[in-house]
Image (tube, rainbow, N blue to C red; front, side, top):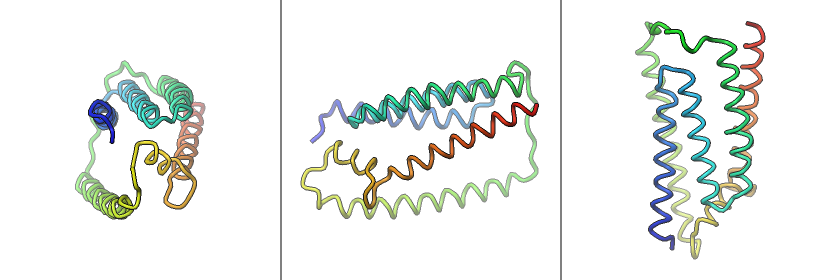
Length: 171
């Protein structure tokens, strides 16, 4: 059984990830958005450290928080002038965007609920679920484990960075 302090620290980390993620996508200033993304990446590293994955936490800080955010900031500074006031974007397709967002929310919610149902059904089979066992389930390579998805996302981020550098060089 986890201690109360450990559970409180977990919820502080989770809330900071959620809050800074929302701030990342809702702020109108792009440099602030990159800063909030940096906070999200640091909080994710804290979550890895809490799950006793020191190597993943160190890689998260060194590669993602250190390297990728620096590349984002340089790309931003090369492609735009962050001090200028940009006009508000007007879109005539707000209803279509709202419907697409709602459909995405429903599909993601269904996937989350159905997957959580399967996970909760298999939890009683574990004699003593601990943070270490949950961490192994998230970062393992066996059936129902998520290391491949984690690596696929890192390749996607790398492709986005390369695309940003190409766009910055064409300007």
